Length: 327
Image (cartoon, rainbow, N blue to C red; front, side, top):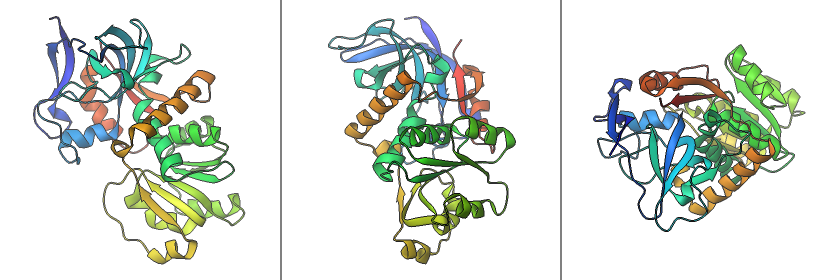
């Protein structure tokens, strides 16, 4: 078989364990689809798995990554509804050692989704985890309703931009925060009705004016270990905080939740059911086709720069999606 380039992890550790190597091209088996990858999305969860600190530890050695876009190279026996040459984005790969940080990936037919011509491959690589996470957080965990006010904490990153797009399209009033001038401009440009600078010590005080003193109905929280205690003080009655990301512990005052009949819910995309994922990708596909969803790509880097990409995706000042490009 012709060798292809892939990033492999032979031991858990820092970004330096990501090695660019040659591996054999995979072959599509029964029920499988072979994708020739044109762009790969980098997610924070990729770094957690690489470090060995995540709840799900892959078997070593493995190729990281669940998000990519490209074209269908081949289909295995029993696959229907997928055509060779079709432009697609993927929602994960088949179980095993070969992920998306490679020249090709193997997927099931259910993991392959059409990519409209209006969306670039780099943008397609920014779809799966960010938009499926935002959809799960907003609609299956927080049960956000049209006309409710949604605060997206950390709205300039991949999941943040996705949450802005989906909440806005759903008819919510969207408030986004960011921590750099560049990030603030991005959040505003991507459709948030109001933008707050979370570098300012009293930035949450602005929410009272923006909501007429009522507070926000839903908070999509990317850094709960920093923000959760304050989040509870700005919720409307029966408000909900969805914890999407956290990097440590925090002390909260439960009375703040009690006073509002508020709810704090957690989520991991890995816990989503097949039905929930199907619903998410149906909504995402419609948005990609009609233009309400256009993923924001912040940086494109060569596949061999995966170690630098893993450092960048965890650095402060998130700005869109980081994408790796196989040669």
